[in-house]
Length: 244
Image (cartoon, rainbow, N blue to C red; front, side, top):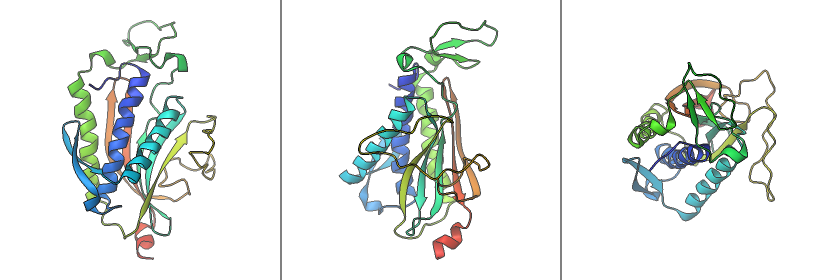
């Protein structure tokens, strides 16, 4: 049963979507041979899942690292980056979570409170969702349908991207909110990317500063507190990079 009635459950629901989406992207973009994937189902929808233990563990570890930062409310977006054999950015699959609510660590398990537009401001410390749908009233089947649509759109949109060269790789990246502390760990899970500067758009195909040639919208979700935008970006000069 999928629930988004508090922040912890919202992050869990999104992390599950992110995990399955990475498998779908790797299959659709042929990062690994099709024989390394098995048929599975998620949200009552057929998907492909990598079956190599080390690949599955790497993906799970990456999603767990994202989840840890999401629970701190420090993340603006998460991206799956497709890189050429020469480590140049070709495509970026973006999950924009900047509209997720910001919740105090002590309140991540507190139920969201829905405040109608005409209601007075809530003065309690309970996480609130103004001018939005009551999360407790969103049927499980509706949440599942919306998440299923993201996976379906990812598969369809990949057809528009064309075939990639052999031996491409991928990475997972995060962009943090302004003034958010860098993730800590020993050994470090995340590698700091080059600072882009305030005059550059944060919506770029990779943290290496490649410019965007084309953007393909995937899905926009507005399910109570789960306000999510997803899209694909192609790097400028992708064709040249593919043939170089």
